[in-house]
Length: 159
Image (cartoon, rainbow, N blue to C red):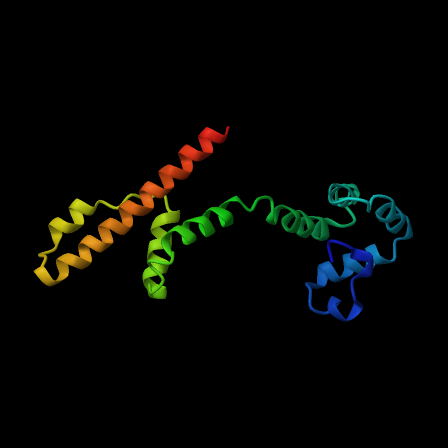
């Protein structure tokens, strides 16, 4: 709807909010705005300028929705950063991680929170059989922190 509001199928209009339906019908039947849209259609930034020129008084809900849609994909930085972290965590040597364990490691790797490992260890009485799992957890966490710092250094070096 937002890439070409004049080509939005009528059968899909029933799926959206009633106020948006009315505004979408008004927009589709407005020949002046259709001509403006066709004039400004050459690039994505021009598409944004089309939504800016819509009158607030006539299309308040449609403009509000368009703003949310346009701003939604402002950057892919966080997504790319998480995929990089995932590639570091799940490599050819660690390809048998469970989904739950991988999810937890990814949460640790993408979070700025620092768990207080010493405090957690002090609360638990560790049996020898569990000690190895604790070491694996600690080394996994340290590995993620080191990778984060390496990425930061590489980022600063490239500037």
